[in-house]
Length: 293
Image 1 (cartoon, rainbow, N blue to C red):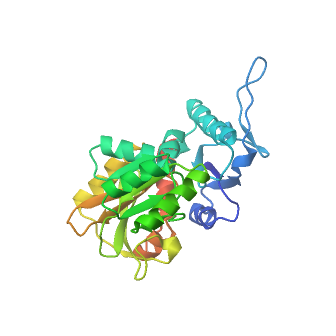
Image 2: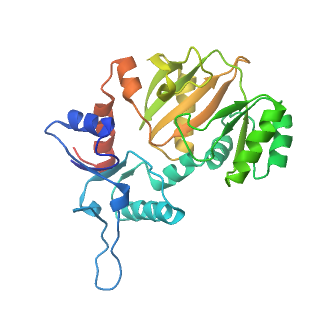
């Protein structure tokens, strides 16, 4: 099988995929910035990327979502969508990437699927944000609308600080995304969905309410029950992401809150905590998606 990976050439995940591929599969790593397209009278539809043509590969795996201008991001998603229409499996599909990277859209889709998320208010003025802050109980988590791995997330419990934070964000042109803070026991659950397979770990941070491994949390094996596995599959399905990292927070109130669905999920910590060759499982799914034995 020939796999094109859109990501960084120095990524650990690309190296892990190559390791797991052995002699059975070939992997080329390509940058998003090299994507291009050919179409029109006299030209066959094609998608050159560096020295390769993506339409000639068995599948395309998205391993990063680099920043870019609005035009660049829209064009990249358009190319992935056209590749799908040409019969090339793209994992994750552009519709899943677009939904997962937009926290408002993702939350709306998860709620529409009947899944529990923290109470959320999204607005564009500091005055509306202050009203939302009060409505959410004066203890909120402020997140960038686009972003991940815990970057740019703040917990705000003081009204004066809230006003300063909201005013500063408005000045940068940011959308204000506020979620009610959910008291918890210092850990959340990461469920890695690979097709219909679900792997689970518990992420614990002894000194920070944020439980991202990138911020110093540790991952340990966790045996998720059928209910949690079902939530993970429903969440991934709601965003149409066959490869997804689903984050669930057990609240002190006994409820489970769905925090996020990551459509470019890492698996390094999960593989280490469970002693599982996750890259090999990803290859199994890719073979199935591409119809390659």
